Image (cartoon, rainbow, N blue to C red; front, top):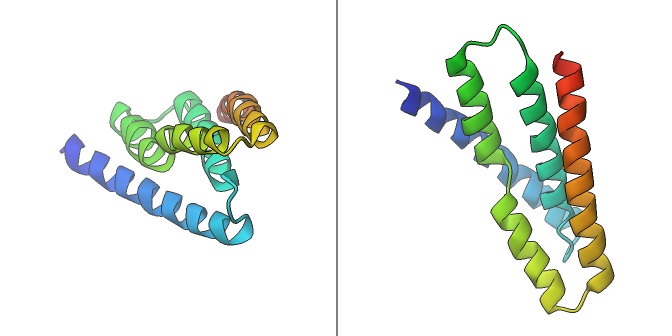
Length: 116
């Protein structure tokens, strides 16, 4: 049963990721800002879901592993980073790397505060 719910959560997360990525490509062509936004929002959601009390282990697993796992894009983040480096976009790569990590950590912390 849990496998089915995980698939539903991951499917929803993937559809959301596709929507944000599509919007990001139209707003910021050639820049990976949508991926950073996805990772920061996913980090916030993971922090929130991991700290909410009263969630059953099943619901928490579906939200964290399914929804957040389907939504966040660390593998895409690393590909975008390599593309920036390969194109010698040093400043963009640095801003993207630091922004993603710092904002992601901040978002997890804020999510945990909101959920507490």
